[in-house]
Amino acid sequence: MECIKEVNHELRAVIEINPDALKIARKLHDQRKQQGSPSPLDGIPILVKDNILVSDSAIATSTGLCAGTLGTETDGSIISPSNLAATVEIKPTVG
Image (cartoon, rainbow, N blue to C red; front, side, top):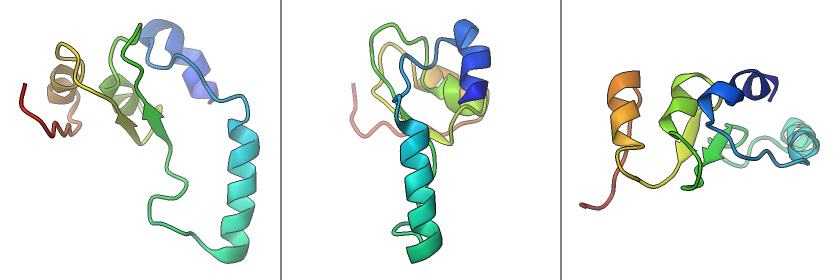
């Protein structure tokens, strides 16, 4: 999260961070230590894109702010950065 704070003023990739994120992460980490991981994706940081006031979701992944992003295509905001940043985009619908 420190990395997000350092670069987000220029990238505008993250609008908001859950204020309880570190507390939740610690709790889940402790659970994984005791019970194992419930899923292969457990613990991987993913950003959810809000379509308002965000310059690109792919920029967050390509700069290492998270392992992946979930968002919708808005005027090239996923396809264009994906092509330039060697990231993968999935667009399940045409249009």
